[in-house]
Image (cartoon, rainbow, N blue to C red; front, side):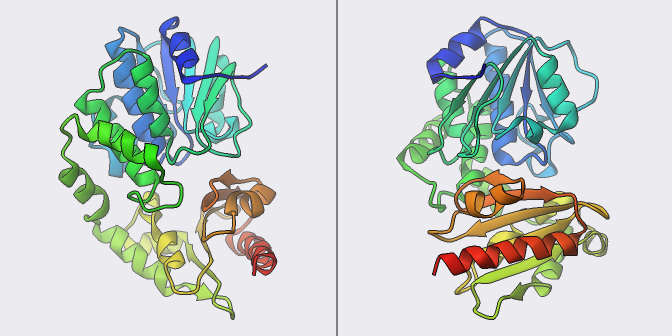
Amino acid sequence: MTKRVTIEALAEWLKARDDIALLGHVAPDGDTTGCCLAMGHALTALGKRAVVVLPEGVPLLYAGLPGAERVVATGNPLPFEPKTALALDVSEGPRLGEAGMRLFENCEHRAALDHHQTNAGFGELFVLDEKAAAAAEIVVDLIEALGVKLTREMAECLFVAISTDCGQFSYSNTRGNTFRAAARCAETGIAIDRITEHLYRTRTRGRTRLLGLSLADLQISPDGELCWSRVTEDMLRRAGAIREDKEGIVNYLLEMEGVRVAVLAEERGPRSTKFSLRSKAPINVATEIAGHLGGGGHDRAAGITMDLPLEDALERVLALATEVLAMNP
């Protein structure tokens, strides 16, 4: 049976165990990547053996974070056989991916730490704070509960995690503790100007071309409240871009005047489509749209992966989004 516990209880649980695999979700973002890396540093400081395992490895955008070079892509050989697994920023087991879920389940001891409201809990025990803007907020407290000093390396990973998951402290999920956690990171002396320039003020040519192609494809409903666009395999080839270059495009759609729901459909093969959803209050895209189609996430930011060709999947998502908008005049 899965048990919901406090940060302090999870800290004691970790102290009593070793050979720990730190697992992130598929299509790793800044939060899951930063949390896993920071916990890797913290557990090593405690004298534990720990390894970070991420699906597809570290995204290029976060490859410069301290410890990123030691991350193992899910399914690849590990430096030791893990006995303990800790999933970070993972809303449910399947979000670990097939290989990640096998690794998690094969460990004798299993726990999770998360902030997604759709998380029902998995593993032996889990920590959940649905009000946290990022899982990294919780990890900052966990490191303190472990009795480990927050180093500059940990802080850089956690600041990136917090900043990216709350839209540079601009999303509605930003709360007082979000700033307090970020301040604790800043107090270690991390180079915030360098970090934010890399994250938000530098863009590759491929990423820039892909943004242009996707925005040129955008469409808007007659009432102007629903905006959508695509990222196709052809667009990626034409732009010379990689998959992670699509991150952030959906926010441009939502920023258009009058738009209340934004949908970005990414072609992931002939019969698979991944969606990024964004909304403005009071519409909850996690429960009102994503949750009905096998996805999940946060009130204003959610995702779905559907085993359908892009146009068929997009038709279903847009139909549901239109219904939700009609119910939220």
